[in-house]
Length: 514
Image (tube, rainbow, N blue to C red; front, side, top):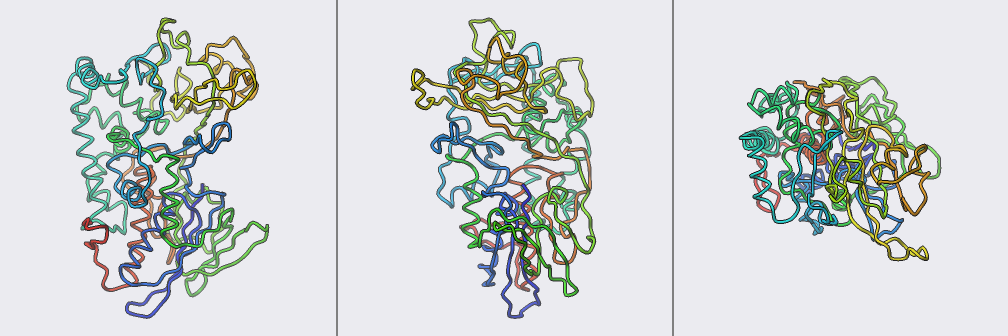
């Protein structure tokens, strides 16, 4: 996705003006910028016009769904699947828009004894029971790992507390992300790798490798010696995980609608030219395959600049780093076959956990290598739901399982045959399976998050006069919520330049103080 948010305004305090906002891209960062810009501008009685350009044909960026069997009644998340209680913006927006918030994993079949297992390539090093076994699971964790789970919980809560400072005065809105990270205390976790941060806080190696690393791998495709400590803690903040029935993209669609923006889908911005008066000429390709130019006063780039394919004139005053991003292969498919216990070295009478996370086996240290998947060959396998296959004659009404696999490479036929317990095919790809074995499939290659190297400085929020950037937060924390927070922050900074009455303590969300 390449959301770019463009906002038009040239403001002198107390002057009469009518700022115009052009936004290119409708992902979390872009839609949130538009939404909060409208909210703040309305609060201060500033008339603002918003236009959104999105090069894709949908709203939501990395949060999008695909339909199993091309049936709109069977949507499943392709990208950003869940959010959690600590995600203030997403939770509030979902409630404000009247969306149906459901527990994450509510559609899982719940047929296996264990709902989760951590696989190291030869054995399950941890398994979590399904159903009413919460206390049993807690006792099992404490028995195996001692006080490490409790220490991790305390460390996570402390880290979340520091993160929440970014939402409120005196830090909000922050003009400098590096300074905000220092003032909030978050750099205490970003300067070190996850492995170093956990060791420094007396979290055992076994718990770190078998539990925490399984979470960093499924969420970011990175091992603890690579990913920084802050994102490691983000992976452990999964309490109250939820999703929106029908797709999380509806949050961002709601934001776009509430912003009263003119939405132009399938419109690719090709260049931004800053004029002598600091306005921007924006060139974009439209559906009719012609290029159009429009002029705006302020631009907000709400996606990694390196993926935007936008020509910029003149050179930026503050050029964002060209940082590496992970490549993630997402494979969705349906099959009448359950995951094979033989493949996972389980007794044939056992069922494979419905969510299989992965880690490295004890003694294998791949260091800070980006190709660190190890002997498992994949990051995770999730059994999402059971669906009925459409009318296909003799198989009418047969239930099929819907799976999602995260991997660093495209899945081959040998791997798929193995996890489904099939004799073949051995060569080829998922497309080579007969419909009786794999009835539907969808493959997508993403660059969804950066390689989260330890660092203490982050990108500028203002790249040039009138040109704002939300994606610098990706190297600090890469989530739907933080993209939304960054968009909210940019919206507040823009409005703060438009009025002398701007108050960072403003109370405009149903009595909730910032």
